[in-house]
Image 1 (cartoon, rainbow, N blue to C red):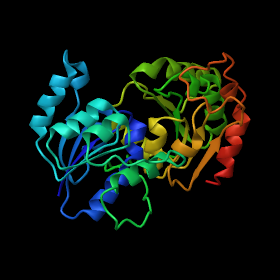
Image 2 (spheres, helix red, strand yellow):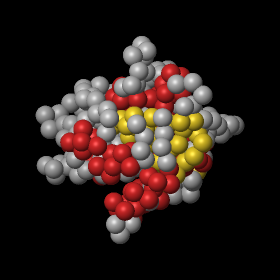
Image 3 (cartoon, rainbow, N blue to C red):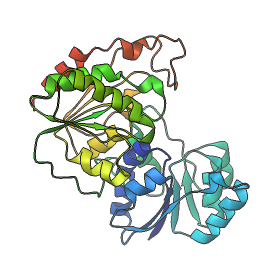
Amino acid sequence: MNILIILPNWLGDTVMATPAIELLATYYPDTNFTFVGSYASIEALKYHPLCKNAIVDETKKAKNRIKATYELAKKLGSFDIAISFRNQIHSSLLLRLTGSVICIAKRSWHSMFLLSHAPNIKTNKHLSKQYAELAMTNTDLWDGNTPKLKLYIEPKNLEKQTLGINAGATYGSAKRWYPERFAQVAHELSNRYDIVIFGGPNETEMANEIESYLKQYGVKNYTNLAGKTTIKELCENIGGCSLFITNDSGPMHVAAAYGVPSVSIFGPTKHTETSQWMNERSKIVRHEMECSPCMRRECPLGHHECMKGIMSPEVIKAVRELDI
């Protein structure tokens, strides 16, 4: 069974799609996957043992994206099943142009027009469950259970108890708690854990700010890896952590995939949809507000109170409640 999967663009969403991919591998015997996606999504999933081909989608950069989509489709060829986890017209078009008979994407005007299956997936549930329902559209054998997140990158074996700090969130500033408060939490826990500061290439400023606060507090047992890791190295290092404190972000879902005890700080996003999936050792810190979840990249009211109101003692309390 040859299955084409168009992965989500974001690292976190891609990790949340892994239960759906595992379901496909379970319900369809002798499966070979071809993954198409962003650089980050491909780097995270190309190590899947059933991955036959992994292609970074560069069509967005083309002068004529429709032409580039057509050329990519002809390069891919036809599949037994083709599924898109993106709700985007060019992804629907790509599936259609492969010539695959069974093409599946979430219901939209373009998927209904272009594809054989466009199920109406309700959004009042976790995104991992939404992806699972989408993947199981063409079978009546599924029992409704959605498995855990799964990455096939081996976690790093860290010798000492390690606390991972992730102050970034690619989607926008509204999702980010404050570097000084991350540093306060790290300082409080530095007698029990070595500290590793994570972040992408565009998040080094925040990471450096955390580092500067740690220096002021006299903390020396830390490493700043922001902007210094590949996606594979990011996963390896997060997987080796003993504790992870993070915003709602891609690295948060990576930690969940490895079952790392975690405290996740939520502000403008839907914790019911994007919290850590099936990580039994996780806590959420958030404040209920009339204006949240607003799902905006920046606070539309200018006060950012959903994050500003969360103080470091609340996060430290959540860590202690994990009982690790």
